[in-house]
Image 1: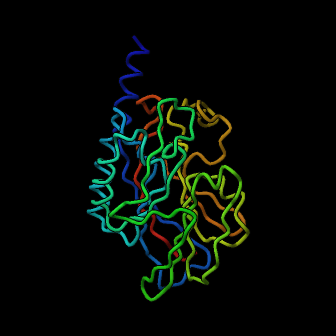
Image 2: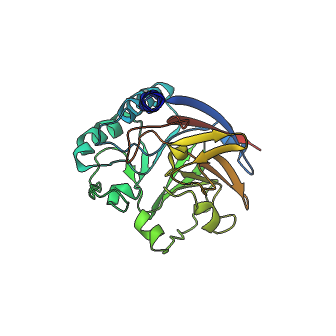
Length: 258
């Protein structure tokens, strides 16, 4: 009976999205960019039956209401090709999002039913695949770069030319990017991938992530060598349509001068 109750709760939690506003101090942030708002979404995993779809729907609605300065979606957009049309509708509802792919988008996973999907022809949004753009906001130049997961997994890490922007942001699905990027190259990394553990058991010293028990960057904010990273808990689910003590989340980062 207890197992049934836990399963029901975990199924419900998969759609119980947290809508979070997080103030994020960044060393060296120009005063003109103080208060800049970035919506960070990740791991939609559309195309499979899951209450994660409900979380995605509410998150997209919330982002539209908030109208942030920038929107970033950091990979694992699809779990199955049949979710492609739904993804296109989601992207069209987000205000000019910047996206990168994750390993599931390219069927680089342990999911035997995963299939690669070509998203190079997105009509809405900007897909960054080992590429970068520079946008101007509040009179300052902001670099937005995105890593192709195949490049990352083959350890051909993209260096990107340095445009001498006032704020440099890297979108990478994998949070271990914090350990491999050149020191001082990026002010902010946005990542996802781990779903905050998805199935988690709390204990007196913290939480045990059953799928990734040794993960160092499951969710939240991390800093190293002058770079700040935010890891999104994500919105969808993978392998099983459950989340346990790892709620889905859409995050609005409010950048502050450190």
